[in-house]
Length: 115
Image 1: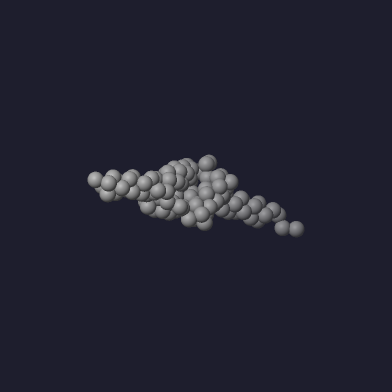
Image 2 (image 1 turned 90 degrees about the vertical axis):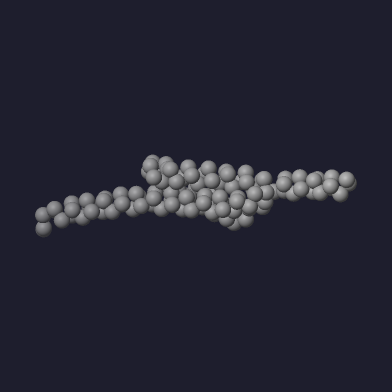
């Protein structure tokens, strides 16, 4: 009877254990989220969607880690991937805008009369 009680207590305690997320991976994911926000991901619909996914997945990873669930590592990887995608999509819009401005500037230079 006592060994059964000890076994149940050990299982209950093990179920409450937390999982430590790798600090470098968590920081990397959070840094990508901040970078995407700073680059204007919230103004690009596709980037905004993946940015929100990244935020939700980061929160879910933290919660799963608190519960000791090893799926936290997978969720953190998903968060990092979505944050990087949001960053890339925001960068693409920024680069495209710069290219359009450069093309317009070149057009204006070519339209000037030769001296």
